[in-house]
Length: 256
Image (cartoon, rainbow, N blue to C red; front, side, top):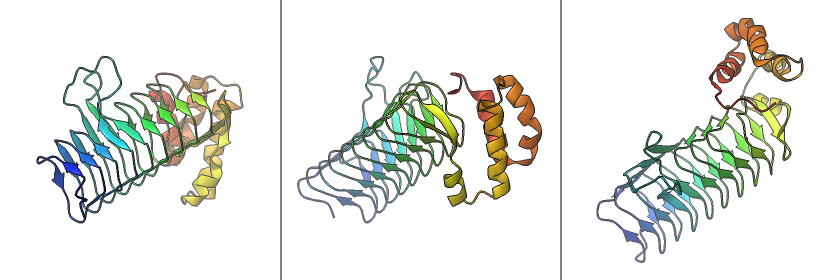
């Protein structure tokens, strides 16, 4: 299961049923979980911990030193969950001591060709990152987010769960949960209602999330006024409560 041209450190920990293809490099302090596949020309630097059943296509670079000029070789870390797919040329960098010294990627994500995940990012589960997306340092992306191709996300931005970012945009502020944005100016376009139906949200829950969106974006309210209007439905509906908490925690301000 390990090609003779692969270079694997003696300190690397390789799980069961792992395939490591031609010309791959697995560095010191790397753990690769059971059932992972490194197709060919994949480089994994450490310290990096990779879960089970992840697939890495050719020329992906995983756990490399970050591109932050403040980084001075400290032993920061990358942690990856299970069942992710990293397509050709994907780059994922470890963290910095200026944050929590760790980059985290959840499970069941799809990272399409040439996507970049920078230092100190925290990504949840079931995320789709399309081709040529650039995610800057310290970005947090919650579960079930879809990011369209060639999108850039500014450092320290937060993307809420179930959001949908259209292709080619530049995200400079936080995107609340469930919200769809499109175009280079990232204009909010409503909520990702079709995605919510596919994920089992009830009609009543979707309706309340739509009403919350209107309170934030369509009724001329300030954020404080919107939060006041959403306080009562947030007690009853988890989706609205998620939006309220996101607005309360946002430091960069939300896309409007």
